[in-house]
Amino acid sequence: MGLEITTSLQMTDSTTTSCRDCQNDGNHLQVWFERSYPVLSEAQERATTVGETPTSWRKDGASLINMLHPHRAGEDSRLADSLFQKVRVLCWVMTGPENLESRARHVRATWSRHCNLVVFMSSVGDPDFPTVGLDTKEGRDQLYWKTIRAFHYVYERHASDADWFLKADDDTYVVVDNLRWILSNHTPEEPVYFGKRFKPYTKQGYMSGGAGYVLSKEALKRFVEGFRTGTCTHTTPVEDLALGQCLEKMGVIAGDSRDTLHRETFHPFVPEHHLTTKFSKSFWYWSYCYYPIVEGPQCCSDLAVSFHYVDATLMYALEYYTYYLRGYGYVPRYRPSVSVAPPQTAVTTGLVQELTDREKHSSSGDSASNNQTKAEKLPEKKKKDSLNLVTSAVTPNTHG
Image 1: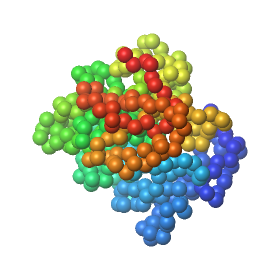
Image 2 (image 1 turned 90 degrees about the vertical axis):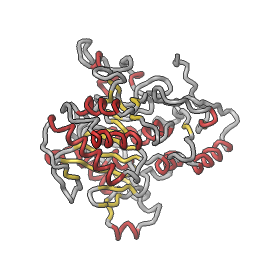
Image 3 (image 1 turned 60 degrees about the vertical axis):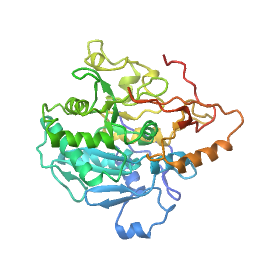
Image 4 (image 1 turned 120 degrees about the vertical axis):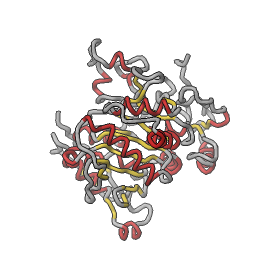
């Protein structure tokens, strides 16, 4: 089904673009996003001041560094902007030479703009796109080799540039801002990783590769150490399972990425499959999921993080639904708190002060919620480490 948008999209402070012919391939939309969010040369970057461009890539070798957090003109994005600075996420995207035009460029033009740093990993390097060449073959039997080498690459070159390290496929859509909410409740020093949790073949389960997964800095360090010490080896080409088995050996916790109402945030299929009863009871998915499957509107968190098997057209549709479409007159019903982590971690004192100042100016009817997403077996954070960011926060009643 083709995508048709007749509403004007405010892409920058000065450019309004509308489309009545954008069907099937999403190419028109892709041009809009790339026109509004260009890759700048070093000279252009130095000449650009904050406020002139909603977001800008700076090319650094095979990496793309996001200089500014993207947001719409006139939108109150102070909280998202703060988390962008305090919870630094490196996104590396698994792709291949044959997918650069059909898939990867659409990732580059949409959700990856919300990452702090992006690296596209391929079997062959391409300095123009750019991609990192991992010196592997293509094919499903090469996925774990690519994953091993990709995580070694980001650890060796970017360990100090980010706090969390996300792996996603080139047909995965990720709401990075929602991911930061989950991560803000944890510290990069915790040996933990998050994703869509499957249960077979490992004691604590493992994260689905298609839905994407994110490692803390400590988890990344332990993964690399596992191969350096021989604790981990290339035991199977099944990338997500093999990575989960290695991390379990290295003492990395398989975290619970569900929201405070126990709704899933990472999803291995497109939204319609989760929102409707498309899963046959004999489908493998029922026996793999670590948590009970819910179909229908409660399948997915209001702060959903990812969906898989997303083609180019749907990639732009999800970007539009996430950052542009709003129901007039409604305040979001689900507004959970953000935990303020200790000073030595990503969420620092500056964010605490900003949120405190905002809280002072909120209405007298505000209510607090200190619920938070948690990693199993990790020590509970003290209540004083939680700060409610919004008014009328939801107090979940489904937790046991």
